[in-house]
Each structure stands twice: as structure tokens, then as C-alpha cells.
Length: 331
Figure 1 (spheres, rainbow, N blue to C red):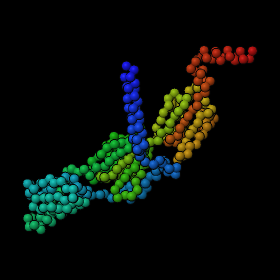
Figure 2 (tube, one colour; figure 1 turned 135 degrees about the vertical axis):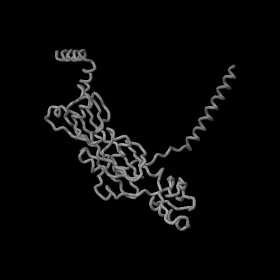
Figure 3 (tube, rainbow, N blue to C red; figure 1 turned 90 degrees about the horizontal axis):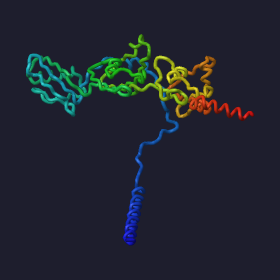
Figure 4 (cartoon, rainbow, N blue to C red; figure 1 turned 30 degrees about the vertical axis):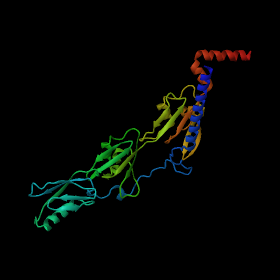
């Protein structure tokens, strides 16, 4: 029996040793998954966006629809009711029509395609003065993509207005920024539009947008509330007015009894540098100190007093105990 137990222990030991050696071999050859380089110290963070002011970029001339691969076209020939072939543009940018054959239409406008079909019909001796109409009935290319705080792919043929697209994507949310970025093919720099907060000036910001534009609605900045407040966490900044420390404290339920009111810390990030400013929130509440205006990514931290926290958690019994200790100490 002892010999059997010994053999079993030896086999177990050999198995453990072999498993350990195999693990060492695999670990020695394992490689960590690459996730990209860290951001350098000189990399700009949260760089401010400057609204575009060039009228030629904000209000370009009307654009005609250009045909691309995947578009579905309907061709109508006046006087020939049976000549209405629906045809889709091939991957090589061509279409094939009855009586005409193959046509290269990639990048052409609908009017140019109408003229091209009419020329082919005349040159083929089939019609003397054909009246051709080409209609785009379906297109995977004539869309505007909305991303960021809003999401959507909005079908567009021709020109639409920015506010129409924003409304079609669900409308601005409380966390949506009023600075809208438009990436447009053929325009090297992003177009920055400030919707503002004044309805009387909204017409100026309601710029035209076109198919293949990408509209990015970024998230509005937030302020982080920490410490001895009734509620903590990120709080979105309001777009229509400055957001001050007192307003933030009101949203957070006000400072608690246990907080060090004379030692509130406002931590502000400038790039990768953080600056700490001490504020006496009691003086701010009494009106004897200015109410600081907060910025995006500010951190407001109210430290907790250990003595006040003990009194708050223990109540009257803790206060009585502290009084008894003080009486005994002065005897």
C-alpha cells in the first residue's frame, strides 16, 4: 500500500514538473498584444476648434448629382412607353442599355447621361430627336453619415440643410456639442459650424450639406464632481450659459457637513499639465469671493474632515463622547 502511494506521488510529481516545463517554454515565446504607442508628452490634447468663416466653404454653389457604381437608374424615352429599363451601374462604372449597348457613366451627371443616350440613339439612326429622361431611383452613395453623439445614415439627393440632417438623426441631446464638424470630399480641412444658442441667428448656422458628407456631433465637455457632495460624478456643461462652481454644487446636492469648505480644490487640466487652485466655497456661498466659471474636464474635489465625518456618522453619541474626553482632559 505504501509502495502504491509512493508510485502515485512520484507520477504526480513528474506530471507537475513536465507541465511546469511546458508552461515555461510557452511563456518564454509568448508575446504581448500590441496596442499602439502611448501618447507623447508633446501631443496636443483637446485642442480648441475654430469655426469656419469662409462663405465660399460654408455656402458653396448648388451641386448636381453625380452617378457612381451601385446607383440604380431608370431611363425613360418619350413616345416609347415600353423603353423604361431600370439599370444598375456596374463596378466598372458602366451601364448596358437596349438599342445602345455599353455606356461609361461613372462620375457623370444625370443631364450628361441623358445627352449621351440621345446622341447614341441619333447616331444609330433609331431616332431623330429623342427626348430622354434619366432618374436615380436608388443609390448607396447619395447619403450623409452622422456619427458621434448622434448616429444615422440619411438618404440625400441633391442639397439638404444641416439642421434638417441633425433633426433626422434624432436631434441634439443634452450631451451634444453645438460645434458640428463636417468632413466633405474635396475640401482638405474639416468644416466647423457653431450652431450657437441664439435662435435668431440659427439661419446663419443652417449651412447646406451634400451627399457623401460626414457630420460629426461631438460630446459636450463635462465637469467631474468628487468628495463631500451628496452626489458625485460627471456633469455635462450647459451650452447656453457659463457654468459656475455654485451651479455645480447645486446640481451635486450641495456640499455635505463633513466637507472642508475652506479647502475645496479646483483641478484644471491644460494639455497634460494639471493645476490645483484652492477655493473657499464658504466665502463663495456668502458672496465674499467670486464664483469661478468652470471649463470642460475640470475636477472639483471637496476633501472630507475626519472629525466632522465621525460626528456625522455617530451623531449625538459621538459628540457626547468627544465632550466627555475633553472634560477629562482638562481636569
